[in-house]
Length: 159
Image 1 (cartoon, rainbow, N blue to C red):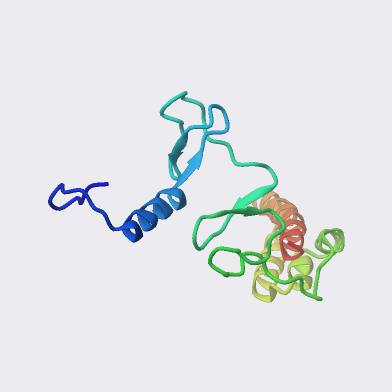
Image 2: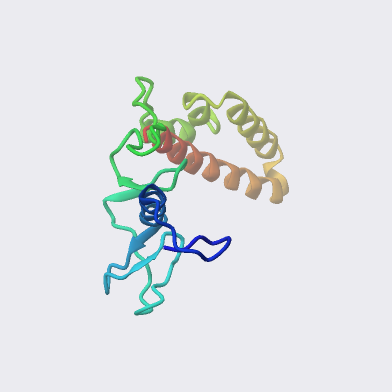
């Protein structure tokens, strides 16, 4: 191994071990041909195949290491990658049904009081002027959005 500054051969084994370790951390292997590629590469330079992420893995948001999809803490850096399950889970169907009957109530059920009140007020104002056609159409769009948003937010809260 040569020193990058002067080009002379390095005899220090510690330097070699550290450099090999960094090489392993910054590289992954192509799933098609098995050659070592840069961890940031999306296409293998040797065979040209696209790099795929295993369906049972995900990446740590802190260090980028590939970890099991169900992992709560990254084994490399120790950062929590998945929030601990909470006791205040929300049922998406209940949230959607609440928003079906009263626009904005599903958001309030999900804990989004401000969003729920804004949707409710906008819906009531548009519904009040329903006879003008355009506000009536807007009221229907707000109502459908409220149902969809309540369902998806409740689903995300349970993740």
